Length: 213
Image (cartoon, rainbow, N blue to C red; front, side, top):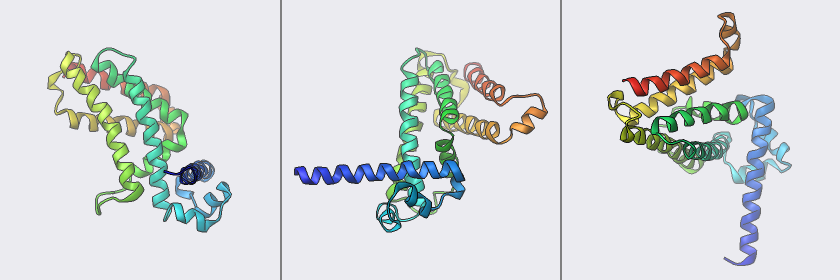
């Protein structure tokens, strides 16, 4: 690749990153459901026409934001598993990393929540959606590897079930709990339960269930 071509590619990647940053800023103000392409273009300081050169529509842009969020989540999961010895501890560390991600990066978590609420199965994914789903698979594989390590070292009971299904169940549990913690704080408070206590209890239940099945 020539120097000029490399500079053009760098500029293209930089502008794409700027657009994704702008989408997160706009979503932080208006919510993911309120995200508007016109507002993203304005925040990124470029024309709507140029925005559509990079992303064909809002769904395409949202998938790209989610892909980047999943890449960061993957890094956090990998880092979390490197600091603990047993497979069960790795699974717990991943759960805590997911909680930290949701708390520290609520806009990115909201983007992922909206993606997970969509049915992406009717047609084969393409473009940014395909890349996004592949990134999600890589995140899942970190969890699966940790669980399989626990089965191998005995820290996770072999009676727990089929590993891939267990991983999906743990994800569903923690994602649902985090959604409730984020959206139902008033209901929890009325019953004397804090959002933090709910999340911590879910992590403990998951950990105990893996060892005691």
